[in-house]
Image 1 (cartoon, rainbow, N blue to C red):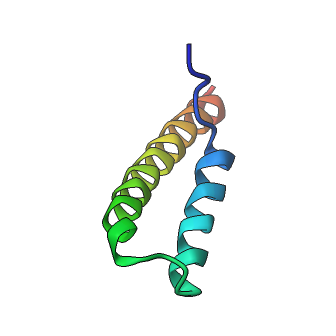
Image 2 (image 1 turned 120 degrees about the horizontal axis):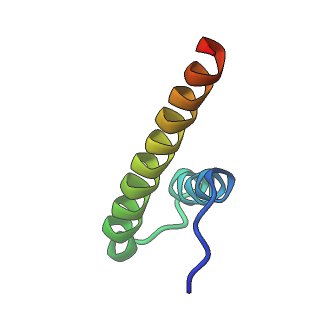
Length: 62
């Protein structure tokens, strides 16, 4: 069973991808793959933040 990705792990991976692109360390062949991964990570992080926001609102409304 694969351990669930954490928000912090996803953000770290996103930062790694961005840094490689900015430094010009990513070749054109891996660019599309890494951009898809980045897109998936952004969606994952956005979903996590939305869920946490909803949980916080529930706690504050009690």
